[in-house]
Structure formats: structure tokens, C-alpha cells
Image 1: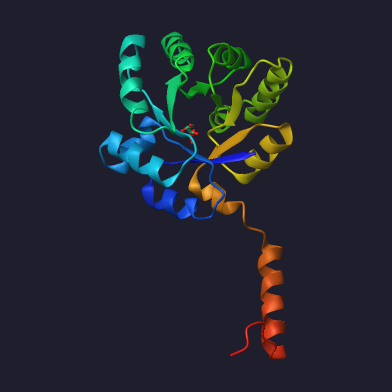
Image 2 (image 1 turned 180 degrees about the horizontal axis):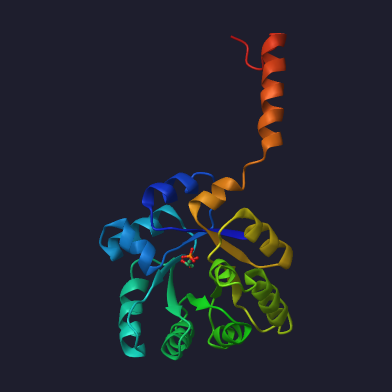
Length: 220
Ligand code: E4P
């Protein structure tokens, strides 16, 4: 499973990139608004830090302007992935960009029918939002199961299921069990994946025994 981080915070992106665990980055207009810098400069900086796909979202509602925005964004770096909303204009833009060889992430997917449309439009990624479905009492992970199983019926579908709106580590582990290709998670969730109280307890005991023994790995 690939790990993307869902943030536009450059300090977090730099810090987590050093772990060697980050395969890409997703941003959205709300995250970018918090970064407090020119959007194109932000995208360029993120693309310099993380060599994998970096999703940058168009914001116009209509196909013609989406295409102009996408054209501007895709020139920033080879790893820019254009993010479009799951609307008729967004999918029209996706088809056109995909036909030109541009990576596209279709975002704001909330149903299996929408995911089928994204695949037909040639998306490199479809982003179903699990947390936002859970928030309204629906089954976010159930949607991931449905999309993964539908896509598996068709060998010609190259669209990867990118689990988005991840709120906690269980969203990540359950998505991995279902065979989702990618999870994009806030930095906090990626850091939470490391944690287990028995790891801390075990390490404290090993360290205490080692210190008492006077043994050394590196001689002075
Ligand atoms: C995906 O690409 C989106 O940026 C994101 O996962 C939205 O998550 P949220 O529901 O926590 O805002």
C-alpha cells in the first residue's frame, strides 16, 4: 500500500519525507489556504521534497477554466497530479488530461457509481472520502470495499483507489486489508501508526537491562 500525506504544511512534509515512508502528497483548496503562500510556489516546493505524485486541485467550476488551471499547474513539475472534483466538468477535464498523459486524481467521491465514472474518465486515482461518510452515519470503509471489488472485475481499469478523509489508523489498516492501493492521511495519523504501548514498555525494559549490564555495542 502506498502512503500519501494529506497536508500542505511544508514543515510536516519535509519531516515525514525523511522517514522514507511517504510516496506522495495530496492537497486541497482548504489545506492550501492554511499554508499562507502563493499556491504555485507551494506546489513547486512540495514537488521538490517528495518525488511521488503531488495532487494540486483546480478550483474553477467549468471545464474550460479547469483546463487552463490544470495546464498551468502541470507545468510546475513532472510529478504534479491534477486533482479535479467528481462533477461532469471535472470528469470531462479528467478525460482530456488523461488523454494527454497527465496524472489525474478525481476527488470528492462518495459512491461506487461515481468511482466507475472516474475510472471511465481515465483517472490515475479516485479519492473516496471515508471519514466524511462516517461523519454522516454512512459506512466509509464499506465504500472502499465496494470500489475495490468493482475495479477488480475489469482488468483494463488502471485507476488506483486512494482512500481519503482518513481520520485514524484503523481506516488505514482496514483499507489495506481491503486491498486499496493508496491511503492519504494527515501527518498526525501517519505518526500514530508507529505507536503501541507494548513497544514503549518493551523498549524501556530492554534499555534498563542493558544499562545495568554495562555491555556496549560501540567500544570507547
Ligand atoms: C483528499 O485528498 C482530501 O484532501 C482529504 O482527504 C479530505 O479530508 P477531510 O475530510 O479530513 O477534510
